[in-house]
Image 1: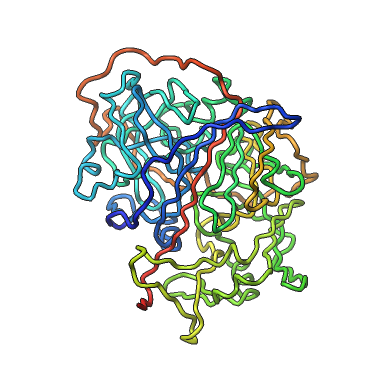
Image 2 (image 1 turned 60 degrees about the vertical axis):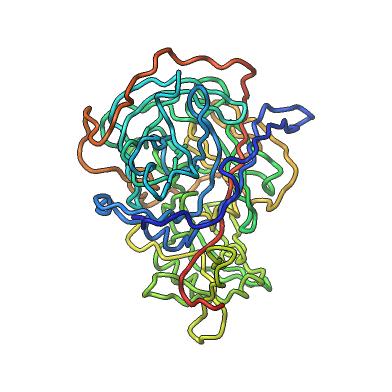
Length: 511
């Protein structure tokens, strides 16, 4: 769960300048895309953040804020007239929700909702109340309760009418969340209160904005301030070679459809600077979750231990972190992850995380190894312990990932760091819809898959009910139905997401 703090850092303005640009596609064609420039925001220690996020539901009764997470943010607006909101992009959950402007949290002296923004149902002519069953909690203990409603969303030039949203009238987090996972992973569905509804990527598909429910994610390297989320398309300039396609593993067993982005990790190697290869794990069938909401990568304990031994990690058991010499970032070694056939090579410099000062005027943050002299940095791979293995941002930055929810497939390729050109191809519909992709032959199925449920979130216990405990309906219900947007309908939507990379740790402070 979170600690209550004021916002940690000085940041850019809440909402970046929105620019729309058409990108040239294959043969000079111009796919209809929407590009959002999003500013970077510095945040605190991702190691502590991940520890808190990975706690179970027993943390949900006493919730405290710490606002510590590496976030990928995008700007959008809700309602008519538009109310600007900055959303935390989350592939591990499926609901879009934001805080009400009248929530006690947002009206507190700390003003924790200032950066994300809030939603005023009474101010929107296209708002329509659905029920009071919105209730969601995340693994870090944060969460919200309130109403479900439908309203208009605008993302750049894309306008979608009738998107179901959650409104937090009682909340423990100042963030707004845009979940883009499977609709079967929606909070009300997991609690047995409703059938799935069309979340943002599903609504884009049903309304014809994109051809099928699929998108690609490019986080770029550790030093980059922006990445890219592309609904309905792939950008061949952002990766090397061709995409290779794997089946998503089910989290429920049997013939049930998957609800999370789980694939099978089969091998892992350490490739040293000179080219010598140490095979750390071979012939495995580990179910691993692709989770952009996790700052670090968490491997099965035996695999993580062998990786740490090969790299020379000092593991601080008291604080639960791995430390390495910061000079390790100068090496050209890689950790290679194999998934039956595709291999993603993660450079060591993407796994060496440097602690940063909280403010530009703050004292420099310094860690040392056990010798008391060597400057230390965090290592981006950790043992999973009792939790399911997760491939977080320290892995995902080295991979270009296509999430095909319609065909339950993941396509992978080695990322092309700092690419400046675009060559965008639309994803079609039906089987084999992802362009420039080859199916992996005889992929290894996972021996076991982690249980379902939003990875960034588990849910408040108990049933729920039409009363929506803790929820407040607006003082008046706006009248008038939703209005259809006028204008061209994009078939491929590009959103640029911001990586927020500053780390904070209060260890040894030197002036």
